[in-house]
Image (cartoon, rainbow, N blue to C red; front, top):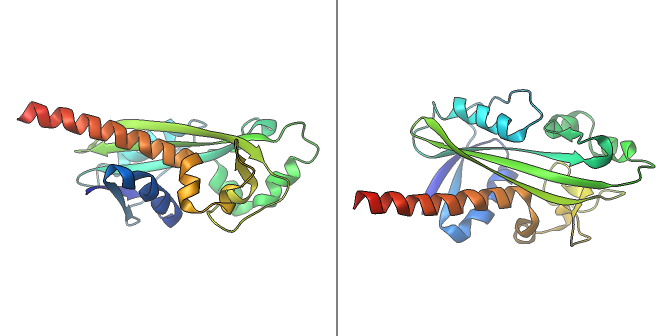
Length: 195
């Protein structure tokens, strides 16, 4: 089993990453003993890359960080990279109130996973899940804005899904799957060069 250190204090993110990576023979190990510093930016790839640049100096081996956000179209992409802060300070109801009377409830979750090893940033993998904001919270699974986001092709919110089903749609799962496919391909190239 290949293992990456995942610098996060969020167990839900660990579980989701492991659900996505299991099919590739990869797993992540939670590292909440290292502080992940997030710069101010509207670009998730920039935030993840900057966080990893600091983290990778403190972790030996393979390490990942992830940044994600809910981008609501009618709110010009708000809360975006500030989703965690908005959730913690204002909660789900604040987004629902802001959407009262909105012509569209379209939104997307975005995720960027930065991967590094040997003290340097190696690559960043991003993904998007399009969907809609429902009119009231539904479900008790997941975290953050999961109870109000329903991906396209389903009426269920992320919070109404079990982990296996959420992994099919999740922005985070798709970004981690991109990392896994890239890593397994790059790993095979390195093995051929050495032999």
